Amino acid sequence: MTKPRAGWEPSRLRERRESHGLSLEAAGEKLREVADRGGLRVAANFQTLWGHENGNSYPGPHYRRAYCLMYQATEPELGFRLPLPAEEAGELTLPLPSPLSPAATEAAADTITEGLDRVSDRSQDQDRTAGDALKARVVSAWRGRAMTGSVTTTTLVLVGGYAGSGKTEFARFLGDISGWAFLDKDSITRRLTERLLVLLNGDPHDRHTDLYLNEVRPLEYKCLMDTANDNLDCGISTILAAPFIAELNDKAWLRRLTNRCQAKGVDVAVIWVRCDVDSMREYIEFRDAPRDAWKLANWDEYANGLNTESSPPGVHLTVDNRYGSAITVADQTRDALHRVLG
Image (tube, one colour):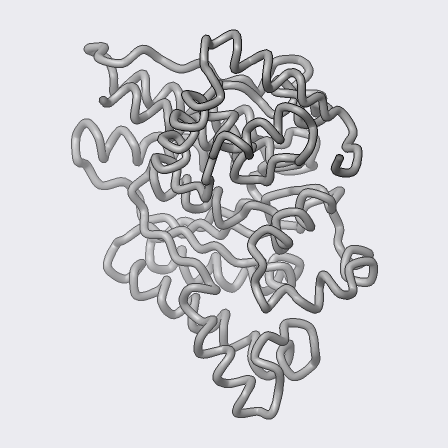
């Protein structure tokens, strides 16, 4: 048996499967189909599902996301964990519109609006007007893309958060529904970063020493912002995924960026993806990236430096992804769009 987890009730997963009239083999096949559609790493063989349902093994993050998609349910409903307050009140369960409706595109826009509203963390002390304006702009981009092909105001969106918080997944989701360009800092700079660290006689996977923080990290962000500026100069709205921890806590940095963008007629919006420490550790372990080795080896020291209670100043919208709840809603919203638009 694996270690106990608060709220984990394996029998509920079996009950949900049986309520759908699925055998273990059929559930595995359906789970693989859902996972393939969602880009999730899931093998879903008979033995694995049996182990999940009998409590012999706790499903990993991609398995849990796939189960939630397949059964159109939240993690607490499937017995994976205790619910957040919003989930307990039923506020994070996403209704799926019916496909093949004459108003399918508008139904999809409503689905996006509802999904974004439900992952927004209203407990944070932020200007709700700015956050609501950002969400409206994303939905407007969807309508313009799907219905009229019209061009909206060019927008730069910064999606920040700690390692393993889900910021990249959420930024990708925004890109999927808005059609805006998506740029991830690690994808753009990782290979150059590793090579530069070696040339400086450092560890290619270092992300915590003064060598990286003072000599390499500033160049990573310069490359990311320069790439974004190339898009913005062409009128292409762009979403950036990076921690942005130092940057968003520096009011002068964000003010300079906002002023430069406004001079070009570009709006800036900032999203912070909030997550709990245990979920971040689980995802960091799951992705098994060499750059995370120091964090995992020194977890208490690393975790003690994280502020998981409040967002940095200047953030327009906080996404509540504690226990992966926001990414579950994003998965279901994306799946709903496929259903609506056929």
